[in-house]
Amino acid sequence: MKISVEISKYPLHEDYIPFIKDFIERLNQHSELKVVTNCMSTQVFGEYDVVMPLLQTHMKQSFEAYGKIVFVCKFICGDLSA
Image (cartoon, rainbow, N blue to C red; front, side):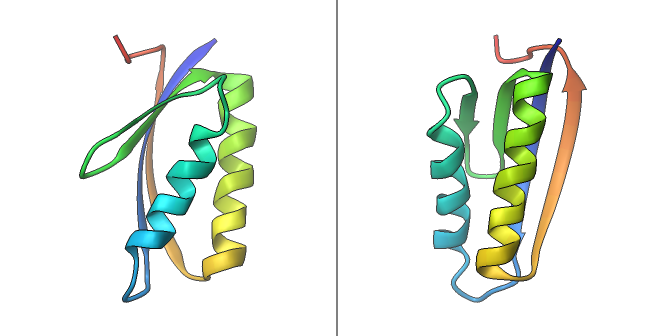
């Protein structure tokens, strides 16, 4: 099953840009994901069983590395990248 996810990341830190870029760069390392970024959010497209564990891993890494972060996510069944 395909899934589309829209993610906005809000690090509760004054110098927040590197925290956001790190998360996006880590997602882009996975060729099985399609990652589209704009100035307001990042969209991730792929197979549900691939996307969800990767998001879990990278969100946890962000919390461990940077502390307090707010993630706002929308999950939609299907591939809306086209």
